[in-house]
Image (cartoon, rainbow, N blue to C red; front, side, top):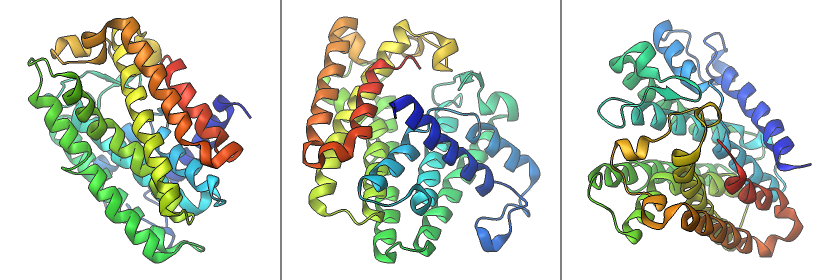
Length: 305
């Protein structure tokens, strides 16, 4: 199976689960229940959550679990939780007090449709719903509860001030100041790479991976995340908004340091390829079992959106 087919198949599973988890009519015994929530906030949550996207983070949870013999269904709560956290971060990132963007995943951003207050609360609601799902992961048959608890702690760390939120803070702090290369790398390790890393670790942990296994996956995620961000920087300059699903030229608008601004288009593209090669090398101990993670790394620098 090629990587496009793999992504499409796994994304379809994730989309179905996300739809179910945010269905107000879902019985309480089967998971989160939103029947008593105001309909307007559920609508706003689902507007962004069900808008599509590559679903890379939940697919990485699933791919890591499959690497160690666990089926997608066994880690689906964690996979969907990571997508909810990612979506909440996009809603907040687009707000006027942050990047003030009008377009996300090919349609108006959440605050353009529902207003800033509702958009903020929709993001908050997705974040808390994500942790309800992570808590329920321990109830899934075949999952070690201690490992599930460890996943909750690791996701919290990766999403918070020492991870994604910390990266966003640094990104804002360095606007207009010309961040040096090492600082830029640190911003993206936190803002982008932290969720990629914990997605892989979550799937692997729930499937019984060893600490040595996790170290290999973490190295892969570090290089993968940087390659992904470099390609994002490239696409912000030369991408097609119809394919990226968001506006282009946003980095220049906010006077942000990027790999393109530091190294030029050709230099940035070379760096992305180097990071992909390093990511793939990190998977050597897994052999052919890691074929889809290898393909996923190559996909990062080939994508147009």
